[in-house]
Image (cartoon, rainbow, N blue to C red; front, side, top):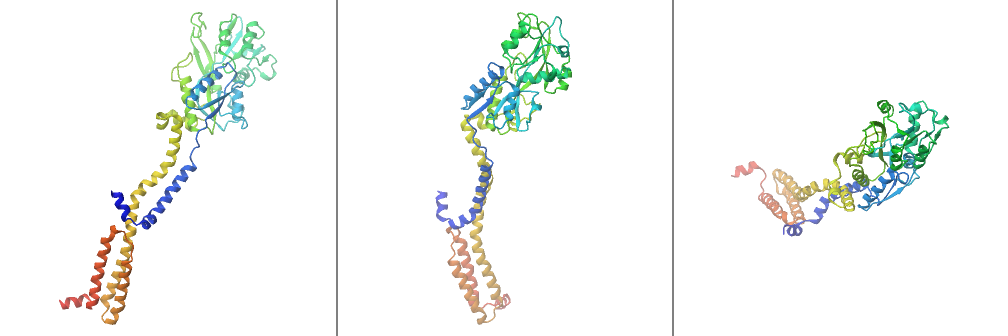
Length: 447
């Protein structure tokens, strides 16, 4: 009812003149919000994984199933391993968005446009060898036939770095071979090679398991883990207890220390924030449980090694998903978040504007009445000095002009009482002019 009454008495011209600047300010705020509005997340994402059968590929398959629940299609691209993944991520012509990358490879390419969504799991380096007695240092492999993994894999890159650090020149050693996977297992068990570097990004777990059980094949235990960790900051130390891999056969038979970089979920810097959250959620589901080499909840983790943790990932690890993504379906949450981005700057201006408009509207209407009051007060001051009839005639004409202007004022009916008060005051001045009152002193004398 109040609204109906307001619409009846409001001066639309005054209301429009009052509210137009504020409306324009709100429109500008909305346009600014739209300018910085994130586009809707794409429904297809491409991940570069690893060779078929590798741990990387199995993880990517899990990600694919989890993202499908939110309507996101994950396209998986096979690769030769971590180094190949990193190469594709840094290649602007490669159609990939995210990939699994083993630590220790960032120095091989330009990675300024890549960010990390977190470390996912340890990638232990298994060094198997044939020898009558346990080997103490990697330098003892000099001159032996060594499989260092396929070119393009993280195994290959790490093996070259470690051999070089132990005085073995990988470029001038003809005994090095790029064998990997099942071929390494067969070659080492048959005695065609003397040692092999294996990691799960370039070899299926069954190959490692077969070598752990193979007679005459030993697993190298690192005797200088702290020195390696200091020299290669992306490497961690893993202490493996006796029987960890096989309790029944007690493999290993004694505690073993392995070197292990972490595998990171690396993305291009332009990854949509909503997809970043989804990927970290998937990583928690896939890698968050306890395993032989890590505790429950240890991964994923924002461990910054070679790639900067993205701002979206840092926000997620600190506070989790936003309210809308926690309580709404993914597709609806993306719409709500984008609407909020536009509405917030508008509401910041709109709420005070709604409180200000009635005040400005009232001030604008009263100002027209107050202008006539100013004219009337000036006329009355002149009337005090007017002593003759000739002096008062032009004042009467001016008073009539003011009266005519007041009558023609377009004032909302809600302000009519102020208009009629003004006319009463005009009547008072008219009577003084008619009576010929010239000054307060004259009035006092007559009294």
